[in-house]
Length: 110
Image 1 (spheres, rainbow, N blue to C red):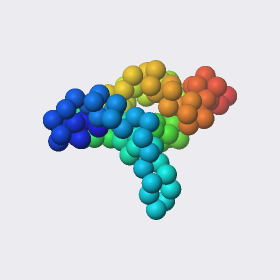
Image 2: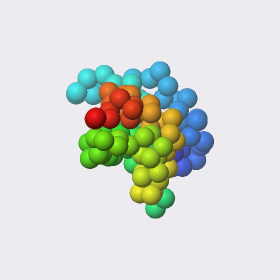
Image 3: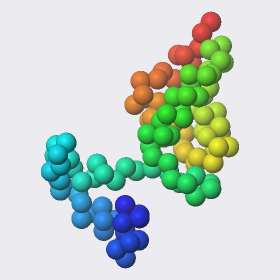
């Protein structure tokens, strides 16, 4: 939405309000216009990442973790921050839940 707002010369919230509640008919079906504006993150280097990419990064970290010492949400935040992806711990917890991944204390293998 930021790119569209810059191109048209309006604020990002104006674009958001303009597409809110509107739908588009495509050969693949009818989609809400907001579907085409995936929210995301901007890395430290200025690269844009979609929420899906961030979720995949979280999933990858958890798949590779040590079962005896699973990564906490804070540790995931630190690792992603080192990779230039700014994300809050609450967002990591939200994405982890959306991915049906248990909290670290429940992923521990004894």
